[in-house]
Amino acid sequence: MNLTLKVWRQKNSQEKGQLETYQVKNISTDSSFLEMMDILNEQLVNEGKEPVAFDHDCREGICGMCSLFINGEAHGPGEEITTCQLHMREFKDGETIHIEPWRAKAFPVIKDLVVDRGAFDRIMSAGGFISVNTSGNTQDANAIPVPKEDADMAMDAATCIGCGACVATCKNASAMLFVSAKVSQFALLPQGKVEAAERAQNMVSQMDEEGFGNCTNTGACEVECPKGISIENIARMNREYLSSSFK
Amino acid sequence: MGWTKQFFNSSIGKKFAMALSALFLLIFLLQHFAINVTSVFSEATFNGISHFMGTNPLIQFVIQPILLFGIVFHFVMGFVLEFKNKNSREVNYAMNKGSANSSWMSRNMIYSGLVILLFMGVHFYDFWIPELTFKYVEINPSDPNRYHHELLEKFHDPIRVGIYCLAFILLALHLLHGFQSSFQSMGVNHRKYTPTIRKLGNAYAILIPFGFIFIALFHYINSL
Ligand code: SF4
Ligand code: FES
Image (cartoon, rainbow over all chains, first blue to last red; front, side):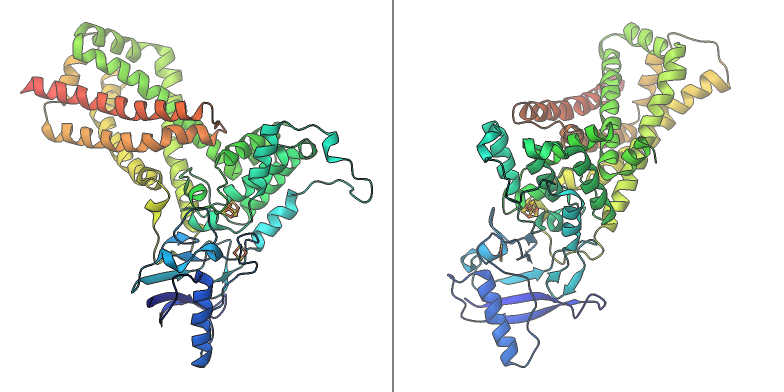
């Protein structure tokens, strides 16, 4: 298939960027979206031009690095997939595809399609952990009984890969789906309950400091999330935050 | 910093306050509707309740200021949040398919809200200001039978009735998202009862605004 690509090009975080138009030819419908980007880059290198910078690592939907806003949707068309799991069969021959970076004040563009998601790391450092000593004296996991339903919900929340698609897709650039997944994953388990109040306070205040917008419950995040994280988690975080404020 | 200040300065605290004022306004709207609907079938009942509401000191000097505060707060907070949210994305997408993942209502609360704000201006000009002038400026003697015919007078004008109908359609759209959203903001979301809240919200969002439209049209048609 032959395609027209409109790709966001930006030299660095200081300079203003713009959309550039490129043509790619003979792309197999079986190739992945990122393979198509590799072909474009080869082409650009052969022409003596600067290749397009984009984030990727595992290319199998587990690391959360890939992050493209394709044709107006985070991770492109398709449900519960990351950009690296998107295939060219989703597109039509002759189609024009818009490729943009995640857009949020808290995720500044570093170069082209690569954004700085350090804000997520700082939120995690603020409370996304359990402070237990695990050096050589770890307890048997089955020693503390956990209700099946809680274990399932915690597991679902823990599948968040920190990609940032929720922020990218939210009209308010809110990070509440991500933060609530992390808050929930711990708050649901006995090991995490000990520090739950402190965690909710610290993670939310770090989130606010980073300049993310405020959630207005549009629900766009859960639709675009590659791991299908539910906004039930946001409601849980609201409860956790509310109750921790009284403590 | 005290915990209340910290709470209401946080993103979640603001969401909570927004939801709380929304729920308060939902209850107010329901009672407003319950009173107005009596104007359709009983002039005496409508006059009776209106007179009570207009002269009871508890309602006039305690509940009414709280209500005004609730209304102003909901609007001001709505603008503050919209401004902050707009600022959280400095460069917009060249292509953004909002409809692929969210409802029109949820993405346009600020616009439906603005129409409702304009309507409130008209509504205050129509009823509230004349009412206050009548009672507290001109200090007229109280007349328990004036309310029903004052109401009918307003609904002679087709333009005003048109504005009322349009505003209530926008209110319906606002509530279709707002009702269940306020529960979510307060942390009320559970597989067991959220579907019921949604159904209840949809019913409220349709029945109440269209009920108000019915009342306006009823009086207008009767005036022809
Ligand atoms: S909640 Fe979903 S969209 Fe957001 S960071 Fe986690 S995996 Fe990505
Ligand atoms: S590259 Fe790892 S999830 Fe896409």
